[in-house]
Length: 146
Ligand SMILES: [Fe+2]
Ligand SMILES: [Fe+2]
Image (cartoon, rainbow, N blue to C red; front, side, top):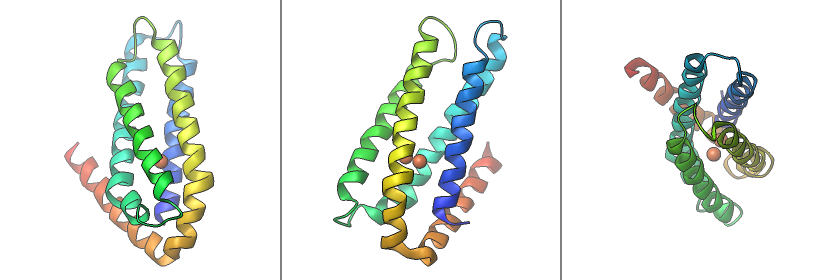
């Protein structure tokens, strides 16, 4: 799997967890919603870590992607902050979830439509395979210790 395939899979997974959270609004038991929220939080934290450890550093020194990467780090911190404030329930939960969804959709759109095509050109398939392998290894390590 290339780095881009792996990251896109993560994106689809995160977006589907958000959809799941949206549909478990009123009437759903709070505990199952909190469970899904905690899963989402864990998945996003790992995804951000993978990108910042393996993917962004490979791109941040190219003129073509420098600004995009800088912007992306900033957006990661915004999502981190929002996730820290969220608990999966309580007052304002619905608003927080829709803010999170908007932030993530915007970020994913930029990565998939601007950053990833640039990465394919700048890094090439061989390097993307190699980064993908490193990411898979780290993912395996994380799930073994979880
Ligand atoms: Fe991403
Ligand atoms: Fe990202």
